[in-house]
Image 1 (cartoon, rainbow, N blue to C red):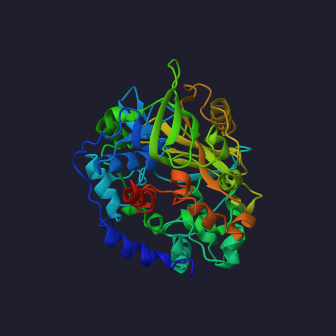
Image 2 (cartoon, rainbow, N blue to C red):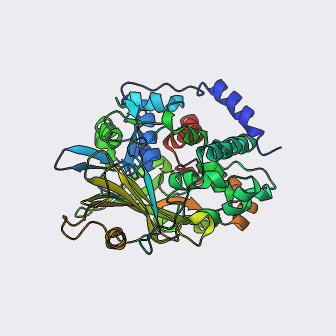
Image 3 (cartoon, one colour):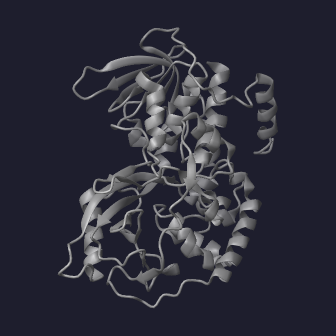
Length: 471
């Protein structure tokens, strides 16, 4: 059986089960068959995929608990509000693809409206080598060159359309997908698109060395027509999670970690929940959804078997810090972009500040700091880099107010990937084979795509529909 032949079978089976189109409900159906500490589904991780799963399963009448280790839902969706103007500024997830029906359906369920993005805010871009503070006379590709490269990229996305919903790779994996993206770009004459792609793929690590597979998976067609992308009408993505939290009510446990998880044969999954300052709580669930980055340390205390442990050990992570700086000294509506004089495509060596750009509030700029693979940077390192870079750029002048980093948000781990040998050896097919294994399902960007619509669609198709059959 070919690697993709399951898709029509899955579709016809879902139709037979009555699950192909599970409607978004307005209110949750009450279901409490098991008692206070027994649940149909325990969802671990309150980011994009976990919150979506919780809303959908609760609406479908399942008794759920959503366990989140931090004080808030949303993970990479983070909004800082300027205390001087009371204006929200998103410094995490910001954009959505309005052409995906699941976006409208889910956000309507949460009473969230979409509007234009901030992508058009701002004027000219000035290019500097941030390591020296000097201009290197960089000239970006022309619009005509960029659009021609976009057209070639769109053709490649069509060629590898099986990446639309995940890493559903054929065997053997096409070798060109394993090329470093810098080489792949030269092969297909994509050089003019690289500066644009690099802006959207900040946080992915060493851009030119990342296997082409990941860029084809990351940079889908909606990005090529950025004017069609949307954000929340209130320019506050965190409202998605505020509204979800209100709907889920007591089903959400914040500041709570799973300190132990065991899966006895022919029994419910047993979980021990640890909450600071309170006794541990033990719960049981028929199914568990792991909706957090699938890095091995995140499974501490879980009874993983050798297959699970072997796969999660392979993942490496990259990330990014997003910040807001006041009194930067940068000219109004200007963007300062870091370009290196001696690297492929003039991309900066990490760790480094990627750029500073305008925000919705005059006098405040957004700044992005990229970190190396498999290691987060402390907030102090990011803040110091942002301020030191401004100093090298001669900003602001000595008689002006000095810059202040108002907020610095770490998005680590942000992007998970494995090496080319693991990809070639069928890593992703083995990863997907874990779905439902010993009562655990997996979701998130590492299995789907690095955008909200894909994460929600994957969670719907590959997790919720399968759980609804068996619970």
